[in-house]
Each structure stands twice: as C-alpha cells, then as structure tokens.
Amino acid sequence: MLKPYLKPYLIGYVNEHYEDVDDQLVFAYDEAHATKIVLETFQDAKFVFQSRPVIENQTAA
View 1: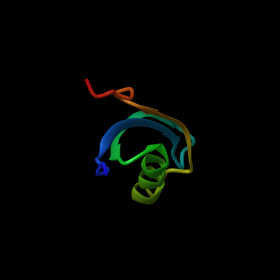
View 2: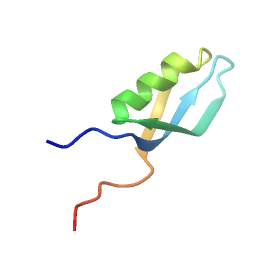
View 3: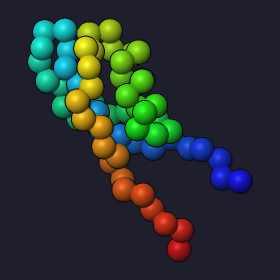
View 4: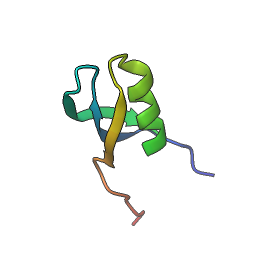
C-alpha cells in the first residue's frame, strides 16, 4: 500500500479586503486538503477560487 505524501499546490483566494491572493504555495495531501489548510491558516481568507497542483500526476517508470 502506498503511503500518502505531501505535494505542492498553488492556491488562489480572496482576503478580507476583497483582494485576490494568487499562487499561495501550500503543501498538502490533495487539493481538498490544500483548500482546508488555506482557510484554516489564513484568518483573512474569505474563499478559495483556484487550486492546482504544481507538479502534474507522475507515473512510475
């Protein structure tokens, strides 16, 4: 069984001043976990509008 590992994600969110914060680097297990980290860590984060992995899925050679 494969062990989960942290992967880099770029998250875009809107802060309490309604300013876009683009490309916040977050290390998480998946995109949902990355979104949760941003919303829990940054108290001024109102909502997440974008999340994408920095490295696309890799296949074992």
